[in-house]
Length: 385
Ligand code: SF4
Image 1 (tube, rainbow, N blue to C red):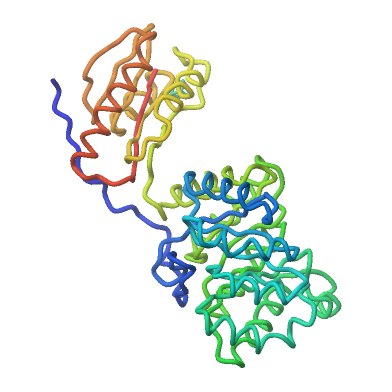
Image 2 (tube, rainbow, N blue to C red):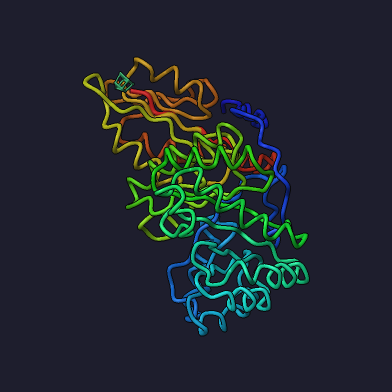
């Protein structure tokens, strides 16, 4: 049997040092400072429907969500918070608009944090002293969540629209009100649906404060558009070291947001990669159906947690090279596939056996990695044609 060399994955190269933000604690998850960038989402159920909300939180948790936010528009929702916060496996943030009384309810319910929107909480400024005191007593952080669609009327008048400057001024004004009462257990978001405005707003905010930042492109749209907008905007900021926790907003089931968020962090080496399929786009030289092969291999290895890189390539142009670089790969041609493991050809199989052979070999490598204690990190499979 061919010896398989399995080293620990090398330390990933990052694009920039993280901005030095202060650290806050959202339940069990540290946000800011040197804490890894966390991924969060928001439930779409009625919060007052405790069973449905906890079920969705369980699904989100299984998909890798680290912090979850729940809406709290009514008293029934506020009444449900204590049970949800207690039974959820991940920290629960209550999302409060319009009614300051629900901020107090969320703190009393034991939520891990409370999000307030200064643009639409009635008499918010007058309540800051009380909120700061209650949050401080309970050790509950506050997210100041400014949103272009609900910008404070005063700033909308001053700037004419939700410019980066307007979003930042709104956030820092509200933060200053809390600071007056000695409260700095804060994270901030300044969301806009235009990635260019959003990136500029976060850059300005990052330069003007040391609060941890929650990144989001608000109302990013359906899954395809929203994924691209979020990847572009988060990518630009995270590549500069800006951003401590992220929420991808999609008009799609929340677990999809988590998948996208995790992929963004993995792509930037801000999180160790798991399974990675290196597959070519195919072209007129392809000697195998690359799309089908890549899809079948991806499906066969779904859920794999170890850092395995698998190369699936359409022909001999780049196939053997990519297959050699990956942990596992196939270079296809003439109805056959050369299977590579750690750079060595271990066998040649007929095209009909490529998928099952790759999956078998991937399982063997994964088991070895688990025995060697390699955590989830940089998966690699290659198929070359
Ligand atoms: S590996 Fe071969 S089939 Fe795939 S894109 Fe490159 S040249 Fe085309």
